[in-house]
Amino acid sequence: MALEEYRNRIDEIDKKIAQLFQERMDTVTKVGQYKKENNIPILNRKREEEVLEKNAKRLREDLQEEGREFFENLMAVSRAYQQKIIFNEGKSSKNTMVSVGYPGVKGSFGYQAMVEYFKLDEGSKNYTEFEDIFIGMKKEEIEYGILPIENSSTGAINKVYDLLRKYGFSIVGEQCIKIDQNILGIPGTTLLDIKEVYSHPQGFEQSSRFVSGYSDWRLIPYHNTAMSAKYVMELNDKSKAAIASREAAKIYGLQIIKEGINDNRNNTTRFIVIGKSLEVQEESDKISVVFTLKHEAGNLYNSLRFFAENFINLLKIESRPMEESNWEYFFYIDFEGNLRSEAVKNALKKLEEDSSYFRILGCYKKMSMEI
Ligand SMILES: O=C(O)C(=O)C[C@]1(C(=O)O)C=C[C@@H](O)C=C1
Image (cartoon, rainbow, N blue to C red):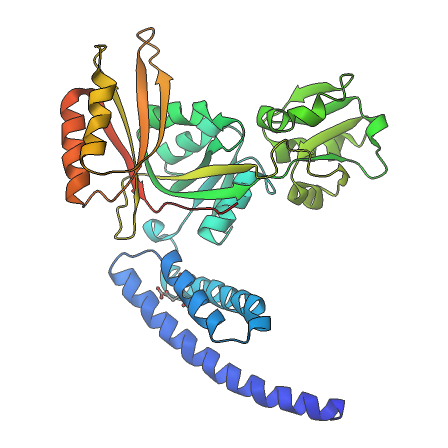
């Protein structure tokens, strides 16, 4: 077949796709209208996953990856259209606009987590410190915030646990991000040129094995890994380097001097999405609570017993010191379940009775990440 004939064939196919696209967008508009009337958010991650699964299976095996990408983009276009046509009329309908605060700058892991979770970066705002996100929520600058809570190599991010309790916002979702740490420098830098390295303390800690091999390097803690990459780009000096992601190298025009320096190949950070209030949905399958117990023998054992008796699977326990009383703690517990389930209601009722302080932090969809 000649090129001309192939192009004619493509034109025919595109004609059909264009008709179907228009039909789909008209239907998407109706869904958008329904969502607006019923105060339902545009993004429905569960539905999108179903659409992707269903349609990938309809395709030949060698086309499934591309098919997923096609439908992912198609739904991103649908969402943007719903936003434009329905939610943006009369622009200031603040409660329907998703605006999210993330830590760091573009290219930070917080930024990546935000894009993954909300599937967009419009209406987002960056903040330097974790606490600034909580303050931004309080001042109603943003509706949601996304913050790292735990890393698979270095453990809990204590500051975020403390802020969660201090500000009283709720966890409404979570997102895991695979973390890669790299040595970045201006083009032409070699490992031997480097004298000073900038990164977030987490960046140093996650790459401690590699970094310990260069005892002459001065390690300078910085607000955020991507911000250190930006700073190194601005310094434009071969003796300065940053530890940050590949994404940050791309955004700030830096060269990757040494790739994948994180000690743990499966280095993953779990982020939580915080909102003003609880958002319990049918598919929510994880709950977080914080409580304190009277300082008496057997109290923690007794409270955890309520979970075992109700066959509830505990996922994580973390303790944080109470500033006002030495050697007493706030316990943060994550467990499987939905707040509407009887077993969960039973366990929480008993736990609340036994606690001197008790708060449900959130009930949201658990993100499992195979490694
Ligand atoms: O089914 C919906 O809830 C829609 O709004 C439609 C649609 C789609 O394009 O298929 C768009 C956005 C949602 O995140 C999920 C799916």
